[in-house]
Image (cartoon, rainbow, N blue to C red; front, side, top):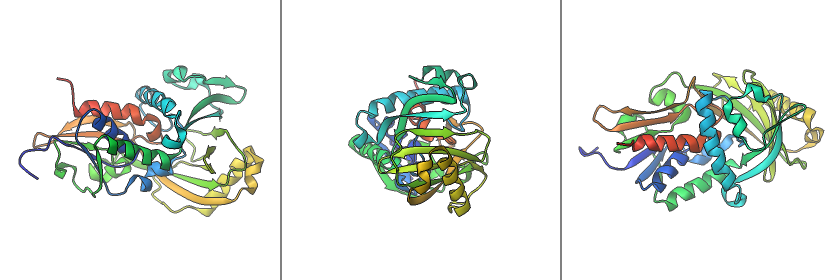
Length: 312
């Protein structure tokens, strides 16, 4: 590395947090590169169901504010669903109650109590399409995505390094507070379901949700703490299909297209802060978003960008 630090920003990580943060920085006029071992299509973000909703993320007051900022962006992007991968879709959170949610819930347009839970029209993001769109938006803003494996954040040659490595932060920072929460999905042919549905306990390892995406239906799910396995479990998959078919019987005959597993980067609180490096450069952390990386992406990206260029 040269003795003079670059005025460039290098974002480490190409999932939803990394790409969104890079877009915000590039569109603010910063020179940005994204370094990632895996391109976006191979990250946990690509596996996600894509429904906007704060899930398994702390602290709730901050998460709620980040989520609302992101919601406003997704509502705008939903005007161009084929391009951005974002659509507004009706659905129900069975068993959820307004009085159990934070203050953010009162600001979600159309969120209302029904007999068996909460109903709303929320963003559903087709993640492969959206990640590709984000990368294109970054490129148009002058940013670059490079395949680079980082083993030492302090050795990244940039004036500011932004750490968006998700679960990778456990070993890279290192931060043992980051832990995996395993999620397994089953992808089936959609038998005509147009609304999403969830019945999710925030402490249970098993949940029931179905999310319609173009050309397919995503069925879930699991939240298995400290489980590092990326191999789909056949018994778990069968249980997921059975739970979802109990809600919508037509699912029982749907042809299975794929099985997916992702590891959510859980932490007792999102780490979003600026840390000085020994040589005077800065390291900005933006990781630990649990099951809500998509939900808080834009709010966290804007805050991270503010830490890259703090006000004088």
